[in-house]
Amino acid sequence: MKILNIGQKFSDDPQGRYYSDGPGSGEEFREKYLRPLLNMLKKDEKLTIILDDGVDGYGSSFLTEGFAALVKHGYIQAQDLINKIEFKYDDEDFAFYEQKVFQYINEAIFDSEIYKPTKPL
Image 1 (cartoon, rainbow, N blue to C red):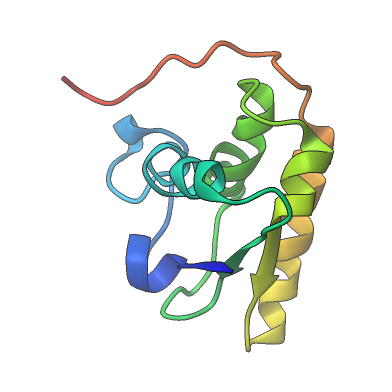
Image 2 (image 1 turned 60 degrees about the vertical axis):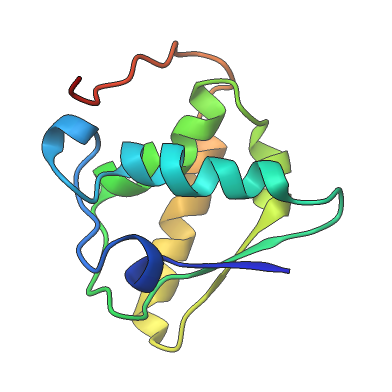
């Protein structure tokens, strides 16, 4: 089992959609952390994502770009992504963010958008 603690390994203030929005963006999270970890999973292995350790909350732009864009950019089908991730949190308020992630993933249309990195050169 692989674990990704967003607040400890990525950012205690995840925000924004693109690299151009500053550090801690959804694009940075997806490209540098989530995508590589998902690619390392064995067939039936899951990635456990800890949402609340050191993080106060998440904006919809971060969650959409960080998670649903995997589907939009054609990296993985929505149901396959849902089957590969699970969320953990101690603060029950974070159940809201888990629900939003799954909603955004389910609303995403597979391979509907070409990925154009916004990372400055």
